[in-house]
Image (tube, rainbow, N blue to C red):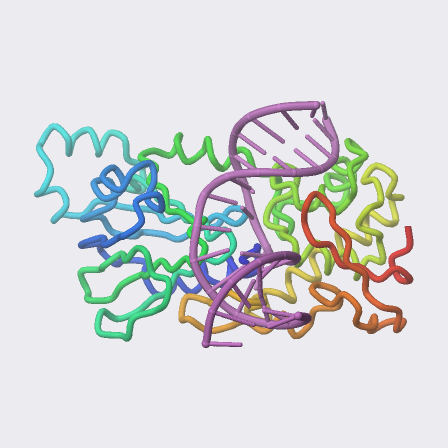
Length: 297
DNA sequence: ACCTAAACCTGGGCGC
DNA sequence: TGCGCCCAGGTTTAGG
């Protein structure tokens, strides 16, 4: 489900709602969802405050800080160690969350009704909680004790299409491979944050065939495609993301970008531009939708 | 470097 | 109702 616009929508809401909250307890019933292990995760996170919520690619990054009640719980030697490892701004540890295909992060009050598919709950001292729901159990939360450990994970990702990616960089990336353009858009090491929906939609806007070898795009095509990517991601953000099936924001609400789909999931339906039936093919094992007339090979 | 298939899992939709 | 099948927003790994 969640690609850049969906993850960023959740990030903005979490930043507003839970920065400053202190994690007093963690409940879970799926050990695999807390990495490297529930024990390490809980030891690292419990008693700390959330000092920031960031995003890189489709990953949410929760920054943790120590506070007095946590310090009382640990030994003097351990406290000193933590202080040495902490950043200048007091950050000491992180956890990242990947929602994969069906993950949800929901901000709730303890007394609120139960949500479906919840497998972990971060309980805050204030009485509020962050519920991690996952229908397919692919998503995870991972504790990272230092900036270096976090860096090892983040360094693998390619540039952010709405921040880091200028047309020269983009065209250089495309020139390096003759793989189908859609697979390059999906490759997180090349460009981060684009998934199956926005790749299909951007290619339709740019009138480019998903199978075209990346290194065969003209300068004009490459420029048009980057603009299309920025356009569909911004539109996704403005409409609160795409709730094709599982996606909900941090308040449990659907987004509405699915109402703007031009090709995704529309096999057999007429293209809004030319009326020709949208086609579905497989590329890299993923469903791929395009208009054979507007996006000729 | 590239490709494919399978794996990780559950659940919704559809045809019969 | 129920069963079998296909499909699903992501990523990793094994094997060719």
